[in-house]
Length: 184
Length: 184
DNA sequence: TTTATTGCAAACCTTTTGCACCAGG
DNA sequence: CCTGGTGCAAAAGGTTTGCAATAAA
Image (cartoon, rainbow over all chains, first blue to last red; front, side, top):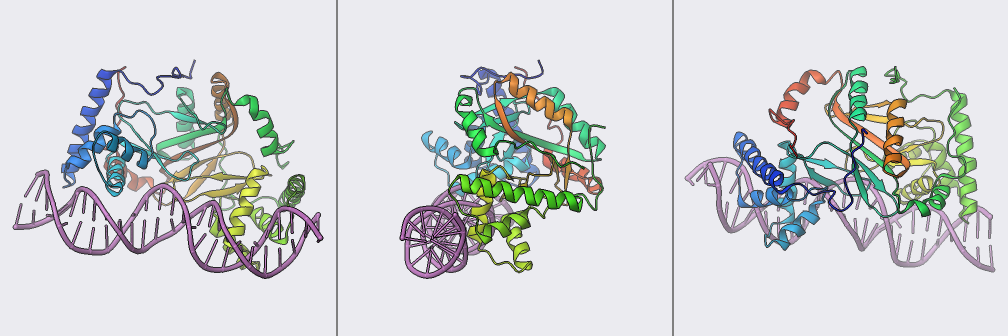
């Protein structure tokens, strides 16, 4: 009941109206952020932002560049990185790492915070959300006098499809008695 | 009550006996893993393992190399990486990313699973543990038919010392009204 | 003796940066 | 106009890899 899985095929789909709304809002916000910081809203930045907000999942910088290129927009890799960084600064994007050797970015507007399950078998990523868990995170922060800005939880394991093969994997990876704890 | 903070100064200390025990156990396990896979227990691997298990916090590969060098052991960077990788394969180490552009490693034996709070102000890292949270993670996995192998939760924010300055930071980073959600 | 391992340096990959030219505000 | 932005290519860093020499088993 706390968890909210989305159906497999449109996991990252958003109602068209909501998407348009969030793209518009994002551009307004970005524009505001830029002018407040004496920065400029260039065509490149606008294109990147729009494309980025059309993608409702985590994406890597290069992938975003290819999306743009496919849409006929040519922007240099450097500009992609620079703009993504600005979007993070502006609070419109989040940079996350999912165990790979590079970063992913995901937009924030119009999406709830969520956690990830990363399948070690097929690389599939399941997004999920648990309000109770979020509450616990905040409670722990409070107990440590820590002011949380954001958090990121990844579970690595095997999805349903892959878990048939996972038995063997787990045995290999963990040895036969991995659950020992120190006794003091 | 669910949270268990360790005092600041010996956060990563382990009773000497427990440490010795875990180092011994680790070497046994590693030896077993190696021979099962027709790999060899070289002096380098033994030294790396022993030093690694003397460090009770997350460490980066280079740092481990310096520790070894300081202890008079010279091993090449390549061997460090290769061995750390083996340790991960063997289920004796965990590779984690903490928002930096490189990986950290931490050993597993003799330490309970734990989460991290990363201070964006001073880079200090607070380790914490909440059994209830762990339970929730498992519950969510079950609901998604996902078999978890391990998980990793990082909270980014500001520690007590830094949170005085954090107000300004947050205002800058998030804009004045970052908490909006889509109404789908 | 056979097969894996080591160290070194070069290769890799993602991300960042210096610079000359260009363009928002 | 002035100040920042863009593309390019080179530079950075962390991590991986090919290879010849070396050493476990």
